[in-house]
Amino acid sequence: MTKILIIEDEPQIRDIIQEILECEGYRTLEAENGLAGLQLAQQSPPDLIVCDVMMPELDGFDVLQGIRDDPGISSIPMIFLTAKTDRASVRKGMNLGADDYITKPFTHLELLSAIDAQLKKQALLTENYTQTIQGLEAGLNALTYYDALTQLPNRRLLTEQFHHVQAETQTTGTLDALLLIGIDRFEWIRSTLGYSFSDQLILAITQQLSAHRYMGNYAMAMLARIGADQFAIVPRNVKGHPDLDQFAQQLLEILLQPFFVDDQEICITPSIGLACYPQGSNDIETLISNAEIAMYQAKEQAGPSHEFYLPTMRSQRSQTLTLLAQLRHALEQEELRIHYQPHIDLHTGHIVGAEALIRWHHPEWGILSPNLFIPIAEETHLILALGEWVLRNACQQAKQWQTLCPFPLNILVNLSPRQLMDPGLIERLQRLLREEALEPSHLILELTESTLMQDPDLALKIMHQLKAQGVRLSVDDFGTGYSSLSYLQRFPLDMLKIDRCFIHDIDQQPANAAITAAIIQMGHALGLKIIGEGVETPAERDFLFEQKCDGIQGYLVSQPVPAEEVLRLIMDINTST
Ligand code: C2E
Ligand code: MG
Ligand code: MG
Image 1: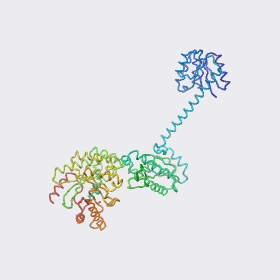
Image 2: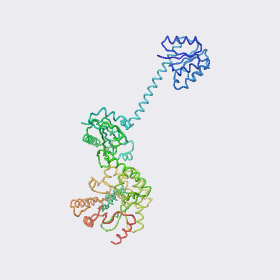
Image 3: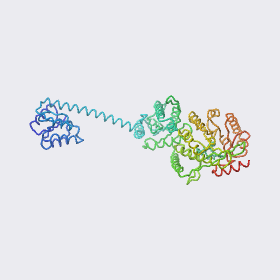
């Protein structure tokens, strides 16, 4: 029932108002002065106040002020009763926030219609207010629990709802399981193709996954986006590892279909981490973290793959992270050194160049091989700083050798995939060559087949830009990837290094000998210089010589050694032949 407070010091007027209102079905409260009225409004807030202006204790203006200053009752509509048409007091009351006024004497109709109008206005305001609050709540809820781009549940909703979802969809004997999908080199896609492109790619992937919520025997109880490139799936009714394994296989298959973004076809390499434990183990955070570790393990495989979480992975991962943190310092604390492996021209027998190979002089573990830390650095932007450091030092070194000895010398530097795709590469290289005053054709950049194959079109474009700078390009470890020589023909290459697995025991391994002979012949037909890597014995060197291979690198000549040692070798070898 609507409650109206009447504040009026004249008892007769108060009684008349009360009678009129009660006849109309309102409940009334009464106060005989301003102070009592204000206190009553605070103790038992009414829906509306009818208040006289001229009163002892507190007058109507003071009551209005008190009401508007109290957040608990500030929005109650208030109608003033004035004894005469005193324009000044009406204006003052309206300025203070009174909603209406009635002049005494008034008819019951005047009073009732003023009250009715104010109550209706108040009801409308309350309704609008409620709607606004509901809208804000919904917006807040969406921001808190849903990913803004895809509208999929986010990590928080996944964490909070996991057990609820599980309880609703699982039957006895099933596992608490999670599949975590990551997209290999997503950061790279984002930095080279842009945020808008990568957002659209994520939307396309979301659509593809959503369209396959039900796949044969498998279904998703929840699909969430929990990281830039990470989608989590709570599977429905998974009984054991074989079930999860098959589910992951099917997901990989659907994600290997090409996506179309801006009319451009793009293929992604998904990696899936799988984690599970017996039903009801109540620790979703650990489950997510385990799936994440398994996903990173899967990312280490070339190509699409999935991995189950194993407890040993956690310690491996934490070692990797420790190493990564230490590697950042290593660069600052000058623990990194470059060793150089001479490169011999088989026609002249002279050292014509050297390959820069990085080493880490770790304070506790001694000298660490690049095979141990380069792949870790490649997972992050650290490889860019590290790669540039190698490039600059190697170019400086080459320049120094050139001034110290009379032989033309090339410097060979390995370039990682991330470095090649780095949008700032060309500009930095230009600056570096200028600052170090190295003739660009003396710099040979080595790229592996897999670097070229990750995104052949983009690699081709960047390689042409590199060639325009005057540097030379070589494919490294040839034969270990999946590319054929005819495929490599499209790239502007100058040199090809045959991987040492083909060179090893080549004089006793007819298959390796046949492959190597064919590579040399076809490579020459394409105008490439061919280098044999990892030559350890005179027999291996002789075979390559007979096949007209252009150059060799390997322990037979020298292991990778510090720069001073290389200078000594150059002077020894190049002046004795
Ligand atoms: P890679 O570029 O193919 O370098 C040749 C590797 O074979 C070197 O290993 C070298 O020490 C080794 N090697 C050379 N001759 C022989 C031989 O006769 N027998 C045997 N068994 N091995 C031989 P290293 O120095 O451990 O480097 C391994 C890989 O690490 C390199 O392979 C390269 O891919 C990478 N790497 C090294 N330095 C850098 C760098 O500065 N940047 C990048 N991105 N990668 C680097
Ligand atoms: Mg190399
Ligand atoms: Mg190599």
